[in-house]
Image (cartoon, rainbow, N blue to C red; front, top):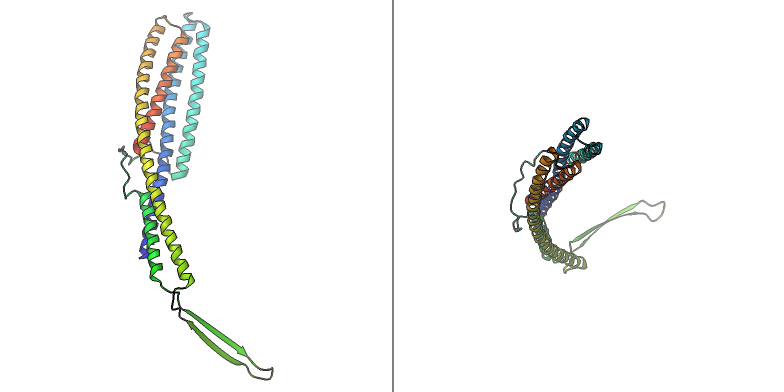
Length: 289
């Protein structure tokens, strides 16, 4: 019985460890996904800034804009290039970290991940199974200790070789001593106390584990709700800044607004787009925890 409980407890611990590693892997991948989204936005920003710079330089040659506008557009392009280089470096580090952990290249998507609702923990939760198996193993050890009412028999063997003087022949003697305890000894009682203490500790750890898992579920629900709320706000702001950017671009093309106004509108659109991507990753990550 104790051996079976030990095997079950070991399997449960392995399952809990796999769950922990899977969580670390998911966190690493979602961090990489965020970096990839940021790099994609940085690439679009760099392309847009390059297109604007070419247009402003053409207008400068034709005398339609001042050199100040050309300098601003050039500076915007340089900033976009720097942001792109930084985003690419972050992606490379994330991909390298994933490769070190798994030995494989990071996928574009997590293959078996399906967004699910955060459910109440049950007895099949690997962490709860590990704590429950540890309690069952401790209980099996206590039952075995309670069945052992006395100490184990002791067998002692004594062998002697001696002689009276140097002229005498050696004599050999062999002695056997068998001790059969008839009552519970101190060692048996100590083993029983230790087994009971192990059971008490395992019961307390199971209670704490249940509370911690329940708290984790509540925290994950709150994080998911917050991520969805933040995503909705970010989408609204992105739509507003995108509309403002379209109006500003039309106004700039007609000569009704200057380059600083256009750059400001593009900066706001870039910021809101970044926020949307960040909140989308956060919402997806919370859905898969």
